[in-house]
Picture 1 (tube, rainbow, N blue to C red):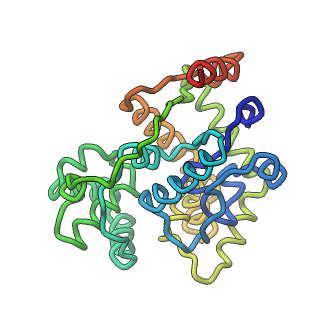
Picture 2: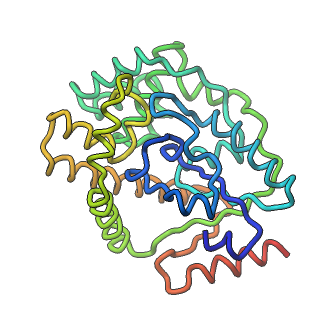
Length: 289
């Protein structure tokens, strides 16, 4: 938002949870006043019962990018869903649609056997995918097994097909990478406390009153939502939900950092340095010359 004040930028959200309406506190969504001053495209475009995939994002983002460029401005894509960034820039293999019944069955197996056991199952049918997926990453394990069970072909086989056309735009990639892991973990803990103090439990209760929304929906698999759904269903106690949400957020941050390290042409910036905004501004100005 500071950059939007200083440059002719329009913001495009790259976040798989911010697309959902009614999920505001747990996603740290910019409030109504901020969104009015700094409009974010691709926020609040789906109901939490609806699915939203990387393919959906690529199609939507390309439309927004072209609209912004046509207006003589520059798109600033911002968020933490790394798959969305890579799919937009490099193109995306066409994959089969989600199958709710298969996903539900896999979720039940995960609850009964543990996700490490399902990761081992995945390794038997798709060793390449299993090697890329953390044994604790239930969402990606579920998707890889779902693709195999529905189609009889591994996710790796599907992804080896020619991708949808890569984007033709030139992208400049900035990554906010805290040097201090201790500081990052402290910020994560502060974020969770701020969510809870801001009424996250009430937000969850309101979502759970929606008759068609279940724990199996993609929206409710987001970090924080999944753990406190279990708490409100009395499957775990508050302290367990809090600890699980904190651990899941740390795991997510670790996966994001690992992904960033594997990405080409990234310009890392420590967001906790004294003049991080100044650093980004200077680098951005250099690219715009």
